[in-house]
Length: 286
Image: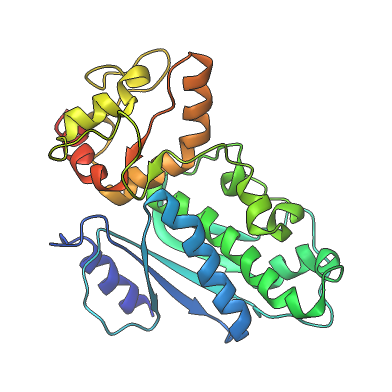
């Protein structure tokens, strides 16, 4: 197992021609999950990642592939990821999931405790129709998983105060339907397709600097990314980015950024997914 992870890490460090922004999610289950739980887990993770331009390639461990990725995450699911007739009482302070850190560096390894998630939700689950419980459990596991993926891909242990990035996800948040859960966000900064209006002018795709200025980033971070009282400094001095890490950082901070922009009477920043690679190139050159 350790050897497999080391190999994956080495391959992830290599460039990925033609796969700008590609990310792999390697999963390992201590016990085979219930099929309906696994399906709901995958669907919900994809539902959460796609609007933020974090498109994942699902892989299983042990892996024999030698694909290269801009970023990867390895998530182990311990315990039993299924609906059981009883659960061990949830203990205050018990963790649902965690990301491994070494000397302050976020490692690409996380663990989700299926037994703890089930115990945390046990009472609420039993108030739902029996035929929906596996799907609800899978959806809850996905939200805990995505919380840890944001730590890994954004490279930070910090949290925000909204949605899936809250430091303490409540049982109600984990049990909520997709629409109810998404209502916590007032909007997404990254859009998968062309945006309507003057921001989406005709002609060739703007370069990274033009994207930076047109998207509204300069309003808070300064015309040259040097930072202002409204936003921190950007660029090489604060770390080299790739498309995955930039998308994850935006996903973690988008609610705060939008709220700050509105408080200063700026238009909230907006980006098209296709503009991210050019923006990354510009920011890394600062």
